[in-house]
Amino acid sequence: MKINEYIDHTNIKKDAKKEDIIKTCDEAKKYQFRGVCIRPKWVKLVSNQLMGTAIKTVVLLDDPIGDSSHLERLKMSKKAVNDGADELDIVMNIPDAIHDRWTKIEKDLKAICKLQDTKVIIGSGFLTDDDIAKASQIVKKAGAICVKTATEKDPLENRELKEKGHHLEIMRKNAPGLLIKASGKVKTIKDVKLMIKFGADIIGSSSGVSIMKNK
Image 1: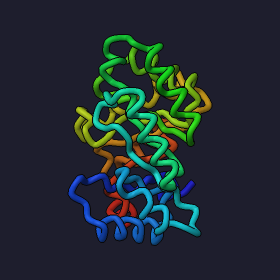
Image 2 (image 1 turned 90 degrees about the horizontal axis):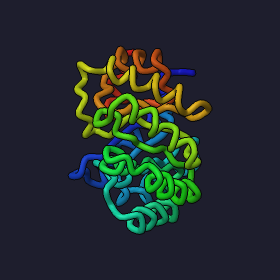
Image 3 (image 1 turned 30 degrees about the vertical axis):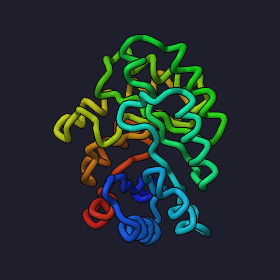
Image 4 (image 1 turned 45 degrees about the vertical axis):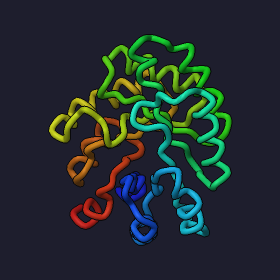
């Protein structure tokens, strides 16, 4: 697979304007990225911009720590699907994970995964290795297509990418058959190749253009 086909080109800046999102879509079309990941308010726009292409409209939901109520999470997920999202990148309830409320997490995710292809962000930088393993198992049981490391709020810095790589290995071992997405501080072609080496199937990055220009 070519490098561009791994990348979910990401623009989740809260102050992004319509023209910024259109530019992100144009870049995705130019480089034929896997997807464009944006905030919920832009799903309709991105879906329209990408119409007729194979590029997926991907929406980030309930960041940074997934602590909205189950009903709120269902509501935002349904709206995203109705607006044209091809994939839901939703944050698992990280406080629940830290407090071992795994049954609650599984029930929440199962309902969401029924709505659309779902990539679950487990916030691996906040979790112990055992929690990462458990979270990956739960994500698989819930019916998601992918387990994802983090959002831009990942506490692991770029210099700690090898630790993120270790997380990817745990995720792959505990969620066999699922796609694995590495995201958060993946900025260069070197970073991308390291994540792929550790088992990533998808790379989430706002640096897709720079990565392609320097590959």
